[in-house]
Length: 443
Ligand code: SF4
Image (cartoon, rainbow, N blue to C red; front, side, top):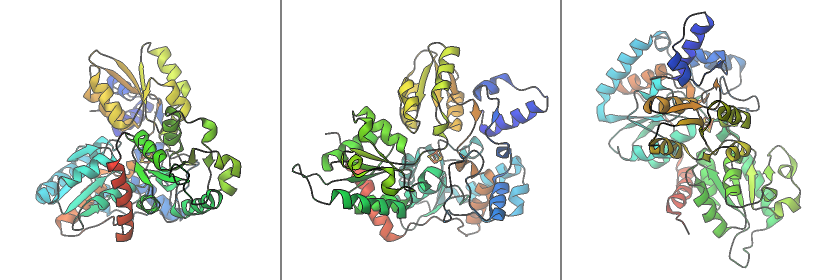
């Protein structure tokens, strides 16, 4: 099976003048290189570099516009033995630790996780599927989440108090989730309440409903729970917006502007009624009139991985592969979604490929680990990533087998490291917003 790591190593060899396996290169979408040479290193090297620099960062590949908040969790140094261990040694140690732990531990792997880690996962899925998968293992004392911080928080909210949720590398955050911090959202909310007031209209709708994407901190999910709001995923964003429009005159959508805009636009909301709220600007960069006329107020957040996709890549794919089926994730910019044949969640993309009965060429606009895995799973199709540069989710990439071996062996010794705990008050309110999402039904 091809993987980002394999592709990176192959590219490195190619640069050294060695031959490269053509099939793997095609699976790597004809890549000319990676978004950062640092990807070929162990993540502990950039964990150390950022510790020395005194500021948290997101690792190679994150866009320059991303700024990790000072409060971003930091990973302490991984014990030397795990950094020095070969892939083969780590493989033996991880398998042995899993064997010893048996049903006491469950390993979850996100679709965007690298194959070197996914091979040890008991469940693979998107963040919400994985949190639910953990519910099927109530006897597991430890849930090892090979994803990013907000996913581990959601698993902690949905798991039992006796279960410990572990994130193998604490620096595996999500740059998009960090773009909406609680203070900025609370401040925005206060300003909106001053403008809109709190009175319901004649149809019984409140002035504004907060909607947070699953890719947000537990604190923001709790904010939505406290303020009549709701959580959405990329699969159910339309259903959730319908729920919100039934109860509110407008929506404050965070943190991903693209998912909010793409979903609302498909529902017929005009772009002029979707102002952007930039927390660094006065009134989010808007005047009162624009906010009063709004239907959806979009937070100024985005995913570093999905914002790399552009219309030029789609044009190129169509020119090179006439008849290509272009499917992109709704975290991509609007122009990309508009130019694609279809757009949908990771689950939608998987199902669309699984449903193709004839050999088809698919150009996919989502994270490369998932695309390469689909290419390996469906060899009858030609499947490649629209982005010709290998650029995995830089934060998810921080989960290396070395970290997984470390947390598992610590568990074998009876020690829990890197536990993610959401405090009770936040859990209670976040659960309200999650339960509203689960209860939301088509009108
Ligand atoms: S792919 Fe984007 S939204 Fe998903 S975890 Fe990575 S940075 Fe966050």
